[in-house]
Amino acid sequence: MGLQMKMWLLVVVMFGILYGVITGIGSYMGLGSATSYIILAVLFMGFQYLIGPSMVSLMMRVKWVSEKEEPELHRQVADLAQKAGIPKPKVGVSQLSIPNAFAFGKTIRDGRVCITQGIRRLLSKDELKAVIGHEIGHLKHRDMMIITLLSVIPLICYWVAFSLMWGGMGGRRREGGGYVVLIGLGAMLAYFITNLLVLAGSRIREYGADETSVELGNHPHHLASALYKLVYGSAQCRKTARGEEELHRVEGFRAFFLNDVGRAHNEISELRAIDRDFSGTIDQDELLALRSRKVKLGRAEKVAELLTTHPNMLKRIQRLGTLV
Image (cartoon, rainbow, N blue to C red; front, side, top):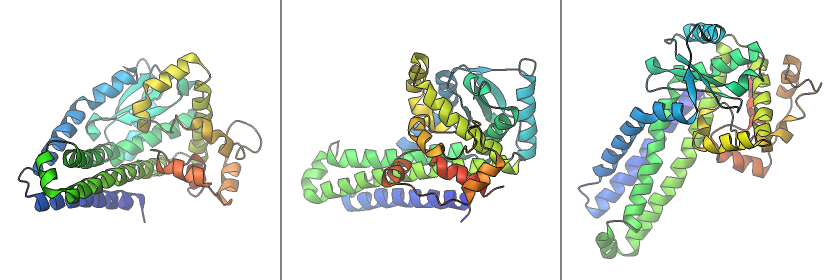
């Protein structure tokens, strides 16, 4: 199944779960205000939609740069945006030392692509271009908006569960006895399941953006090499006071990054075997060699992947090998 089809199937499943929770509880309890949860969600989503870009810019310490200030960066972004068939995004440089890049915006015309100061010292020109292609892919797919929409569904399920079990429906809870508590537990279960599905959607969109970067003309081994370097660079940040402080600062925004900076230290051991010549990069031969290997994750790695916004890095780089 294609990645876009998986994403839309996920949207259908998520809204199916939401519909089941709201309709089931509303029908059983005779609630005329069940739609209040939807209204609250829409208001919350609208608020997030309006202030989201400003919050990201502030927390990521973004400085928007002109073509005169950053001619090469603007040229790369404009070239890839034209190939992707989208308007040229606004270009920014984050003052963070964490090596990474990210994209965001309210609409495709409000798209913004940013790189950090740290990534410029780490990647080659081709690797950086592959990373920018990945971020352009996020804008092209509009997946930030989809994930924002999906992220509200677990919140609604939590509101329902809280209201039934501890909130303002106490009277109805006493009337319904244990059955109402059971329904509340079901809503709480839906909360955990939909949270896991949102994380799955986030991982799907990372694979999709990787594919788009390659479709835009970037060689898979350049993106693989960039990801490999970003894991090491993110792990190194924990060794400095400034890096540790920045990692805490962006904790709530890790989903925007190219890799999960919080798991980088754990991923290093998995990636060591790829760089067979110890060059610090992944060339095409090394990527092809990884493609033919069978990657088996341990139970701990599988659980860790389920609970994160990004795919397991070894699996992700191996998948890039299939795009060669």
